[in-house]
Length: 259
Ligand code: LIP
Image (tube, rainbow, N blue to C red; front, side, top):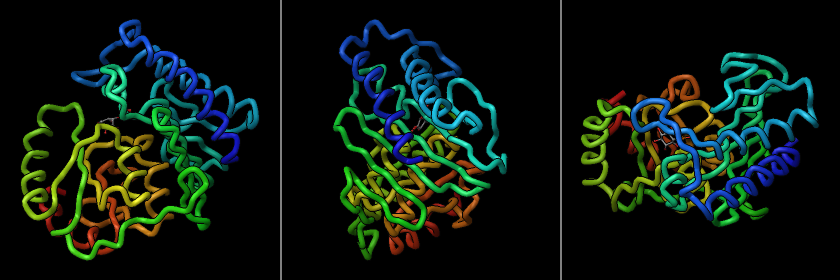
């Protein structure tokens, strides 16, 4: 099933890469303030869904742009959770930091996930219980002991009211670490945590398609994913801290006041 998802992601990447050479032709609409969808998101999603349903016609789909034949609490045998472009705002500005995210939920458990960065040709994959990989090489989270030595990343959604809170969280964490970056693609930042490129990541108000594959990458790479109060219902809640064990332990008390 992961191989079919990889095939689907590569098809979507062809659509995205072709469009990225001529960003002025991208057709953009605004779902809400600063929350965009493009014709490329839609075409990439169509390529993914077609590939998956051709192989598995009875599987359910939960996808960002086309709605769904499923929902998060669907306990069906197989539900694919898809974000065709995570980081759409980056994409439509030509800022090369976005990815495709595909996860498979089986009877309520995320069992497979991939995050594919079509710009760098980085394919991150994970299967529950079998580890996380970047281009077929095993990856692990960083074993940083102290937050004072950690480089972190964070994000904020399109809601302007969330920005003030983000800035307060930013100050609390940035003043105690090597710094906080903001890449604009939650799935890619989770993959970066899994690959040890950053020590941790936090963001509130995400959707399940932003998180599902990346969270499996982090846990399979030896990290922890939880809500801001440390609880683990992050797929429903949408608030996520992801990091290696020690940094996760340091972030929870700093961020729990914002839970
Ligand atoms: C985006 C995320 C981004 C987050 C936005 C949004 P999209 O996903 O990945 O990091 O801050 O709220 O959800 O809309 O580009 O797929």
